[in-house]
Image 1: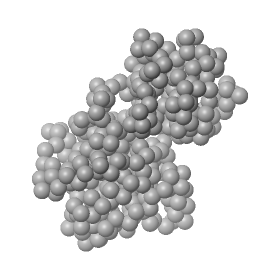
Image 2 (image 1 turned 180 degrees about the vertical axis):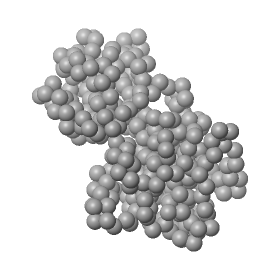
Image 3 (image 1 turned 90 degrees about the vertical axis):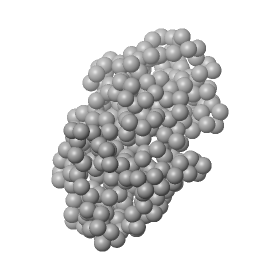
Length: 346
């Protein structure tokens, strides 16, 4: 997601009022959330949040949390690589400045969790987040989801001619119509290629090469190709760009393959040894509150929780087949995945 419409943010403000006046008290019978010591959090007085959350959304979340809790948010917001680079530099210097870390790279979060960088914490509504979008022990949990699927130009590709599965993309009818991003430039495509190369084999990508697929740098370039009509089918695209293009009047149709779509978490984690651990837990729990989680679908994107309505016109998250992702395997094979991909498409 890039930016949340200002008009939509009002829904988040209204939800916050509900959140403050009527706290959520019911959880699944078999799930007991970890407690948040709010008096201790208030005594800490502030929380440092490093995040790649789109700037307007990040500022809105910080403001709503401050209003709801009285705890000041010190926000460091930048692109995913810059956020992770700053965090890693401080970690290597044995300096802990961030209390809470939200990125768009679950593979990196999985590695850091294994290295002991995070504190396990299962906040209220943790049980409502898909297993594919959280660490089962609570070392991180999705704030929102990046949905990856297939996109087509609805005005150019008839409904009965559209692909339904990833494998359909190798059909000769799509020759010269396909485009997708390069895994060397976007971690989301790295996850998709790493997973599909295991599920369908590298032969799948060799067939896409034979189908004259175009490789571009990132997801924004994929959508540019569709909007201009230079390519008609995104063999892997990111929902946030498609949503924005539909708002701008482009006929972009989302297809979630029956073999499974990707719901890639933007994970939030509490940093071990941070200055304000209780305030960090309070903000982490707020991320999964109605106030924040309703903000994303209201703007056309998927939040992390399956119990809340999806974006208008989109299927419920619980109704989608989602591909499991082995982040540890992808982290180990990153170099090999990029090399093999480049061998095929160069």
